[in-house]
Length: 127
Picture: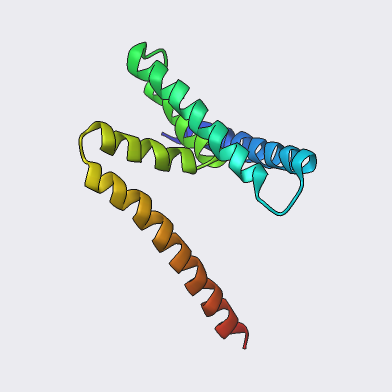
């Protein structure tokens, strides 16, 4: 178990560095105020997650240790958005359309509300 956690942490470090590098590279080339770097990371993350999961589903070339390292470690640090989209897709594939819509809308609306609440709490603490 400890070895598995070390591999997940190492892959997570690589995922974080990859996210930072790609987002920065895209921002340098595109510029502007729109977050194109994050946009690119999230799109690429979804593509990679889909490819990896598709291989796991059809060929299963990866054992549980490698799946945890790649999907949880690397992809989780690269972008959790890909996991969010994957889970929503699984709800859709399972015919749970209302749950998928609730997941999409709920996480976005709640996320924004929590961010604004966090900002307000931080400002209150500083005042």
